Amino acid sequence: MKTSALAAANPDIGFVVDAPHADAALVIAFGFASWDALNAFDFDGRTLKLAECTGVALNRILVRDTANLWYQHGVSGLGRDADEVAAALRDWIARLRPRSVSTLGQSMGGYAAILFGALLGADRVLAFGPLSYLRSDWARRDGDTRWLPAFDKLQRFPPARLYDDLPALLAATPRLPAIRVVIGSASAPGQAQNLDRLHAQRLAASAAVSVQEFAQAPHAVVQWLIEQGRIDALLRQWLLPDASALPSPAENAARNAGAPPDDARAAPAFTDAWRSWIAENLALGVAADTLLPTLVEHGLHVGEAQRELDKAARSPYLAPARRLAQRVLKREWVLETQRKLRPPQPVIERRHRLPRDMFLREYYSANRPVIITGMMDDWPARNWTPEDLAVRFCAQQVQVQAGRNANARYEIEGAQHRKTLRFGDFMQQVMHGGESNDIYMTANNVGANAQAMAGLWDGIVQIPEYLDASDPANRGFFWIGPAGTITPTHHDLTNNFMAQILGRKRVRLVDSLQAARIHNSLHVYSDVDLEAIDYARFPAMRAVTVLECDLAPGELLFIPVGWWHHVRSLDISVTVTFVNFVFDNDFSSMYTTYQAV
Image (cartoon, rainbow, N blue to C red; front, side):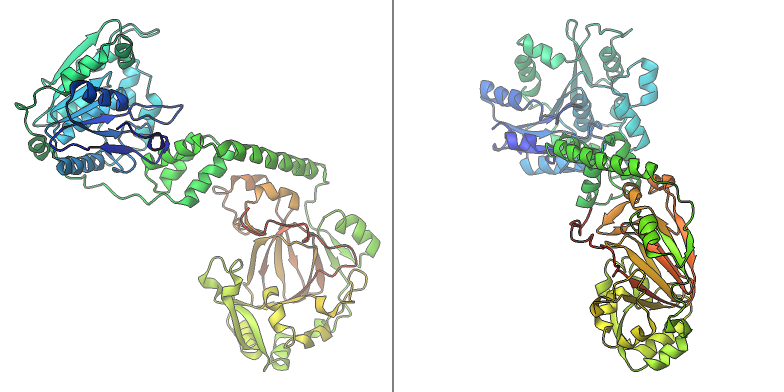
């Protein structure tokens, strides 16, 4: 029966087997290249008609290379290179035990018909308008620029074994099929010579090849033969002769089958994560051809990668995704205009005892960071030492974040790193464990430690100039740890004060209006390490200004809502952060993107 429309429309289906007959001839038909639409299963209807008109039982395997790489990087479902495809087809031939095997194709499919006809030890090959080589330099020499993008891609990403010269393959094959090459030799505009004849002459150097030429036909000789009403007779003459005198396909296959090349290696499987990466880039308008090198550099099979790119580009889901991406880009344009209009801020200013109205006008409402000095001078906590804290709260059971060094996602997966221990034991690690990011008491532990560490608040003054102290449950968050603790790049959903009590912290900040460049991957987190930016991975960061400051004891850093920041402790450190401003600080109620963005 004819290949179903569902199978033909599914880009993941690279071959179809239609073999209902025992002891019947087998035709393996290879599809041609198609750049603008999904490749068809070529000769599907024609081979069915051939069987119906002749009354001869005919089994079929229809094959297509949806990557348009001349079958050199395999076929979906059959293998990742020509040798693997040939091995899979041999298995099918052994299973079907056909009376004879013929291969058939036009253009790219014609090349494949000759290639696999030789590798399989087929009985007959019928190739319409095939090339004889896949080499860019030869094509440029001969003025055959029709398929240069595919040739260049094969040269850049060669398979383990590249079959790029059919005459050389035919010369090295001990037992060849009877090969009929059919070409149209009508002059083509702009061509000094007929290119199909050039390739046919190269192939005819093999005694196994005969050439049939139609002087009025173009390269698309099959379509011309259909229009002339001559295709069916030619197929019947070549594909269904009396095969009794021909060598058996099993005999030829045994002679011609080769072992896989020594340097063949398995490529990793294509994952949905890579498919998402392709979809996101295509939605943002990135050209598909520029994505292929990245996929190959990460070890993915070039044929599978090309097929995935083509499938994504043809998906009906892509158009609405691109429209949505355009809306996102419009919003990013608004952010960019606001960034350009905002006065430049080369450094984070230090202001002494900043009055409330000035703080509100110049920093809080303007969404600009500032360091305020002199507002913590009356805090009893300024007299704390690590040793005093260790003694005072020694027996209290507290929760901390531990084992962070073993997990690069320690902040995102903070719940996995909660550990309960005596505060005295925790402080021994802080004071004597050296520089480390492995253990840290953070805001993630505030709920568990509210009662055990309540006494810490005796040393803290809720700064009335800026903070609302009316709610004891919303006083703030303590951060205690050794030198070397890190809070990776993120933004908060509120305006924050960071009050430094003990030790120093180095803080790097990026303007909230730079959100489009900082690769926000999940919720409030960025993959960009502001300490060591990987510009190869995040090239947009080259246009980003990163502000940096070292926060000393007694200093108060205002971090505006949405500003990205990365924090490293330079010494044993005690910090308290506040969000209970006297000004409106509700920005989380309108926030919805808690998952991947």
